[in-house]
Image (cartoon, rainbow, N blue to C red):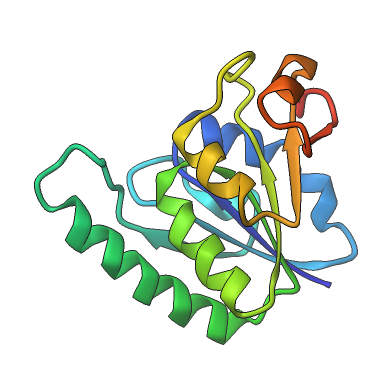
Length: 151
C-alpha cells in the first residue's frame, strides 16, 4: 500500500509525525508546508507546498494553485490513501484525491476538544474515515470514529 501523509506545519505536522509506524511495510510520502520542520524524518520523499492564510489578500489564487500542484503530486505518486491531520493547505490535496478515487483518512486536531475546526468541517463531508481524538467531538461529528490521542 502507498500512503500519502499530509499536514501543515506546526502542531498538525507534530500529529502526523506520531503516525510514523503506519508506514512500516508500506511505501509512503509526505506533503507539508514550506517553512516548518523538514519532513525527511517521517518520509524520504517529501513535497513542500506554500503556506496559505485564508485572511491574506491573494488567498484565493494560492488556494487554486494548490489544487493544480496537488493534482500533479497525486498523479505522479498514485497513493492508495491520504492520511491528513490538516490544516487548510491540505484540503486541496484531499479534495483532488477524493476525485481521483483515493481513500481519505482525516484526523481532527488534538487541540479541538468540543468545537470543530474549519478544515474538519470541510473534510467531514469527504473523508472515508473521519477520526476524532476526543469523545466530546462525537457530538459535533456523529459519524466520526473516536480513536483517542495520537500522542
